[in-house]
Image 1: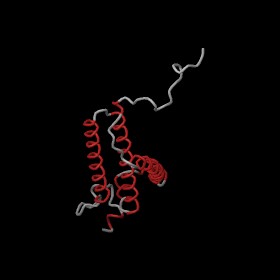
Image 2: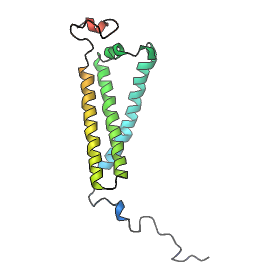
Image 3: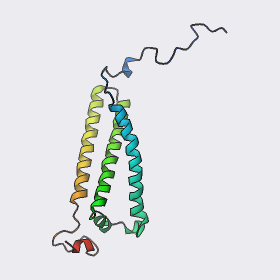
Image 4: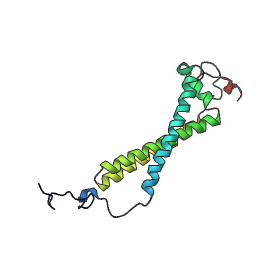
Length: 161
């Protein structure tokens, strides 16, 4: 069989792209590259944050048997662990939101559907980040006048207040 012009394969991306796969003519510059970079950096940071979190909660002290309301209350009495958990919350939410945003961009074909799916995603992200941040920084295990009734015994950090 001889090689003719009819039997050759065209070079990639030389043919016409089906219009349903194009999304307008505007470009977003480096925004997609920055989100790609954020995913890589936040992923590595999350692995480190999560492993330290798991090690400090499960391997140190009584392990899983020691995890209770008092343990969390004692841990969050230290600003270091508050900011550690805050960093985990924010990075995990932003990392996950960016991943779901990418999935929405890939699979939602209509512009209106894509817009509203992303608006719901962004609203849910903001609500969870705000509520999680408020819980971390306003958590008060030692209720005034409760004398440790929520805890098995009044922990040391409640007595100092």
